[in-house]
Image (cartoon, rainbow, N blue to C red; front, side, top):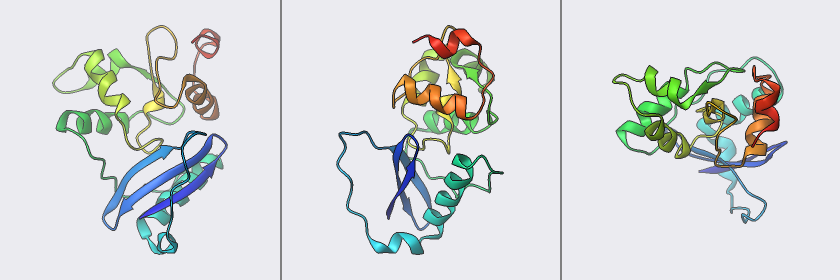
Length: 163
């Protein structure tokens, strides 16, 4: 099942099974809008995901997330689990995240796994920055900067203006 959730950054396409949310990705202006069926409103998983996104973009207390079922390697899922522990409004560098993993990993490997995150916002990959500047983001640095400002992340002015 699929649903679209409209945000200030553009529409987020949600895809789920009856067992959990598989992906949440920001559609780019050049992406065609997907065909959606009416049964999405009957999906508890999609309804819970949309409630969570409504709270996120409404600056309200976040309700529990739906069960997440991202597809990826065991290593990627390990990194994504660690990402979920980065608090709202805070950031961590690729190196810091790599050192937090058990066993510790390399920042480059962490960066690759972060870049493959299929669950935008639910697994907050936008909260991972480079030592110098914001680092990359699958949806562009401006979207990352917007999300960090939205969360009022504690970034220095040099990170908010650098590319």
